[in-house]
Image 1: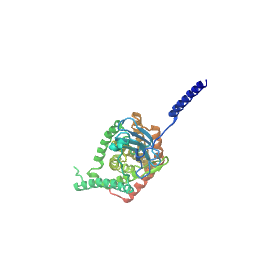
Image 2: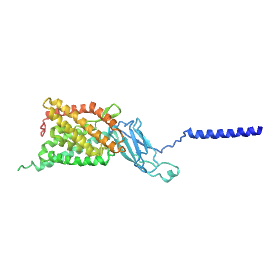
Image 3: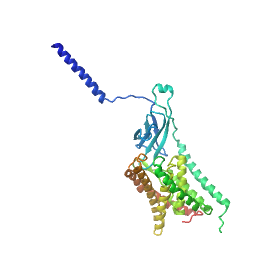
Image 4: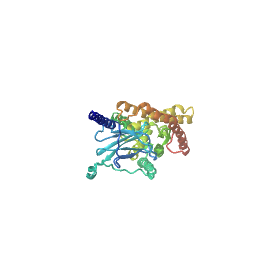
Length: 165
Length: 211
């Protein structure tokens, strides 16, 4: 009798452990941290202000018709994604005003050693626009406009006034 | 207001190019020929000024920004087609060298900011200048900005209706996000700019300025 009670208790214990394990696996969210896996993109206005809290979409080269990831830039204008395949990942940042960004971010295939270690493909880094460029770029635009109008003006001056029939 | 590449599908951007190119050709032939040589320095200066003021971002509540177009004055002085050609040049330089606005959508941007807006401003100037010149100039600048904004909103709304994958923001949100800054800030500053800039041009007494 006593043995029977022990067997029943043992079965209850096993069942309880099994249920507890199952419940835990259904509800517990685990995590791992891997550094250097993500591609980070900072989005900013031409005056240097971050494009913060703005909707973005990321498209994988493996599935270009459906967003791989959507979200909003953080308050410093950053967005990030973890590429699973190499190629050109399309990043779109969409302001409701129609301003925005639609660029391709190149992700290179991982080196063999990195591949063995399970690292994601690295992305090519791009340098931010320097503060000097904020001044020089408008000057470049002004120069281009000046060249177009000056060339036209000089060309017509050289030919002289139009002859009237 | 400068739409970038990728926000509009070829269903909109290609017809817009097809409409814009004849206007550019017509405007170039009419306003940039040999007989217009005297007005080219002023036109070039105003185009350069328009380029500069389009790069100045005016912050508006909500974390976004707006800017002027500065081409209404070109429409008032030389006609809407001249404004279309000059704004086309500005947009091309911005798209090629600065990433502000796209090349594929250049036709849409030029029709909105270079033709429809300045045309509305020019009409307002023609209608109201008899009443008060300064009020007419202000109204021209303000109206030009509203029409340009509405044209861009219309293009984005049409795109959302055709295929929201290109532009996922609902038209009502776009209308509010673009319309409120345009009505309250950009339009007012554009109107003031038109008044101020024309008075400066007249004081300078440039050759080739008729208005």
